[in-house]
Length: 267
View (cartoon, rainbow, N blue to C red):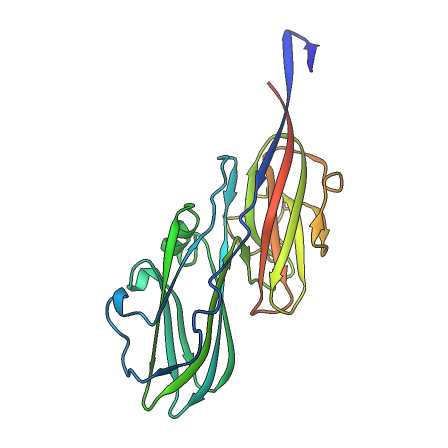
């Protein structure tokens, strides 16, 4: 649509941006059981107990930014003669900068661990996981003495957060000035419930966890529904919007399965 305005013609531009990162799941990497007898961490990725290749797609438009990627690890220890069972998970390289999990389990049974990566935590790993390329996760296990038998090793990763703070953690940011409507599908790996917030950009540090006391952070919508639809979120913003997520259980992975934005601007 064209309209006359003062000194010239202004064009109204309407666009739709879509991003579907989904959920990346290694599946159970242990088809039966494995007895861990090593008493030190093996050296070299060729000697890893397990490996998995996962890929989180990157946004195709530079106005969309991923600010947080979370990972969740599940394991089952069937027996252990002398604990603890140690476990480490690396991304691409076996060194401290690429170490995603550093675990120390002292009892048998089902185990869960989660970690959020962003610019202020495990930044080297975050920069890898958000680049849209395939990355290999290497799993190493060893015991203090004796042995341990494991029957489940599974890893999930997604654009999301394990945060339980009521304000949530910023996971996606959109840069835009003008009218915006958003739609999103939110999901969870775990047993709790999640909350999704659409915020006007507030100047919080990228990927930060809000305390609920920041000035300028305006909540445009708050929802616990799986789907947040267009129309419910239509608003005019100066700099853009942010999506935050939080959950009710600290070992859950709350994530954006997919989202889209309809934008109106003038040129």
